[in-house]
Image (cartoon, rainbow, N blue to C red):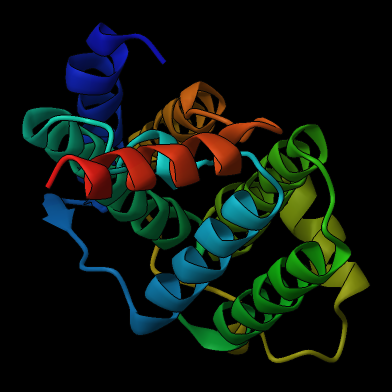
Length: 218
């Protein structure tokens, strides 16, 4: 990662995701604070990224870097985690049975990703699929069910879900701009993850050498 990316562009990108991910638009603009479940899911996602080599924290913070460099690295990590929380916040349904189902579904998927120890490409692809499928469920399927006017998709879904209490599946309707804002935030978030410094085979040896050098100069 170049210095310009680390110091300016990547933190700004993740900060944008953090702000836009909590935005909801109905009759007014509302900024929704993330639920505790989004924090837990973000921790699991970061764990998966580190375990699979898509994120190498030691390349952002280690004894061989100056104080300012470590500070900029810490800023990248903190803004990335905040963006991960808000990315989940933006795709988790607002209420009802779908909210619980999506949270459990994402929790299981992330645990499976951590256990599988897949490589960087697969974990980034898996992250895109996880957020994309949750986005479709919330902003297309549930939004159609919650729309008072509805359309052919709502009629088809109601026919498929015959016998299910609709109140357990619907959520408060938002303006279409909310879905566009969430899509924009997710695209930025996934792009930001692709820019993070990855782990290379020599990273651990370099970190050990830097610690030894730091200890020898004291």
